[in-house]
Image 1: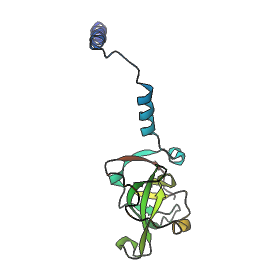
Image 2: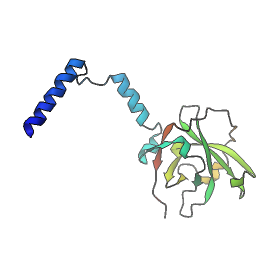
Image 3: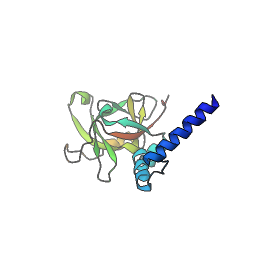
Image 4: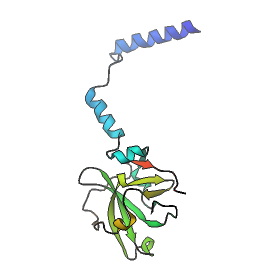
Length: 160
């Protein structure tokens, strides 16, 4: 059995050499590009075990307060590319009827300021009161990321 696998490996090596596809190293530029795709820009997300998430899976998720009661602060409306190139969540915030679009406004929250908490998004690095102080986001003022794009977001375990 060992002899057959040795012959098979030798045949594969000879055929790859004949085709010019011998085990060549990945060019440094391509490797750096791949590394940049895999690493989150914000180190806070990396500290939270950043996970790849499809942008189209985020709208509609609740934004929860980072405390045991986990009250709802708003809802993710979309994802845009921020001025610094980092992904930012468009979050709809407002009063008690916010989910129905009454008395709401849109704000941008950096992906580094949140973490995935099951099917929800937890606000991590912004005080919930400061969320209300963020400037209103004007739809269309920044490029929306396509639904099939992937971004990195940290994960967090429940607060209770």
